[in-house]
Amino acid sequence: MHGTLENTLADDLPARRRYSAPPTAKNNFLLYTSSSAPLIIMPPKKRGFKFTTHELVSLAEAVAEIIPISNTDWDTVWEAHNESFPGLNRTSDSLKRKFQEMARTKIPTGDPNCPHHIRSAKRAYYKLIKASDGSTGGVR
Image (cartoon, rainbow, N blue to C red):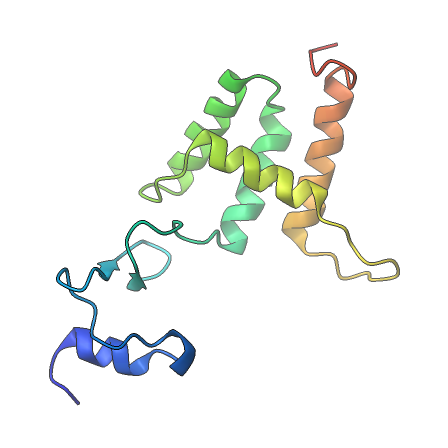
């Protein structure tokens, strides 16, 4: 063992993700903590934390409940999501993009094992389409 937490973490990373130096503020690698994962090593100015499956299911359920058509509705979705998952620095736009990505996911024909978060997102998307006018995007 090298004796420090940073060196131990750097040694435990898989070879393809291991960095040449332990993460410190000097070499621009930072340590992040969150409630779902105790310690994450991330280079700065990169994309944020990945969505967990539980978080995606919660997002799809919030969208199905709120049926966001306007940006204010997406802000309401963000507030509901932020109550369940505080501290992840998600924006209403990032939640909207992630939901749209889940709703557009193509499921292979004949595969009965559709992930729960995708199935929930597709159902919420159909509710959203039904509640809005598909040609203009406005409320019916």
